[in-house]
Amino acid sequence: MLWDFPEPAPDAPGDEISVPDRTLIRAIPENPMIQSQRSALIVGASRGLGLGLVETFLKRGWRVTATQRTPSPDLARLASDALRIETADIDDDAGVAALHDRLAAQHFDLIFVVAGVATQAHEPLHAVPRAVAAQVYLTNAISPIRFAEAFLDRLAPGGSIALMSSILGSVSLNQDGGWENYRASKAALNTLARSFEIRHRAENVSVLILHPGWVRTEMGGAEADIDVATSVTGLADVIAAQLGRPGAHYLDYRGQILAW
Image (tube, rainbow, N blue to C red):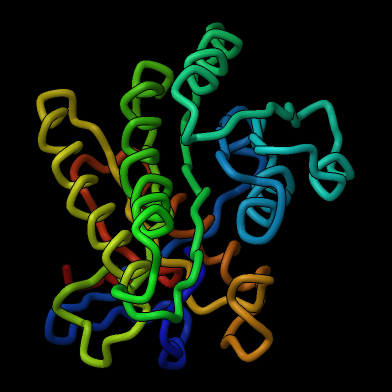
């Protein structure tokens, strides 16, 4: 979920540009006072981008429910009256159902599935054991959509389902190869997300398929282009600008539309 090729430098604030297959949509940062009653469910928040998103939305006055697969000391350190921490594994249907029951009284303006894996991402597909390749596909593509389906009734009117994808999931932008299994899992996520939105189109569902940039995290590596704060601030701004917009939208952390 964190992997990508280096990004071009962002344009000056307030600019809007159109180039072949891409359009830059400028996000307007939220007014924390106006958004103080909004709520988010961040799935996969124990570290990295998920953790950064929790911290960012808390600072913007949102109420946040954050999930961890195992206890996260970093997430625990963000403890506040506005933060609820739950434990769940998106690959465990029974665990997801139990989480759904525990959150029965809540509705969320944003349900953001961040969780994902990049196991043996550098190896060509034929060198990755079948079980490992299948698990990457399960965690990165199937489980996020199953989670979105299970929690759609917890989405507040005017809210959005967000899924952490990658520019590597773009088939048309794949000019360099590599990252084969990971790339395929994110392409599958994109396809399934579009099908999810079409299946629920009569309900005007908003689905944001988001690329975080190439981020300096444990997964992204020290050589990556941007830090977590830059990525999550951009993602939060894009979400603020797009929240509740019907349809399926494939965007990066700067609001730039990505080619499928």
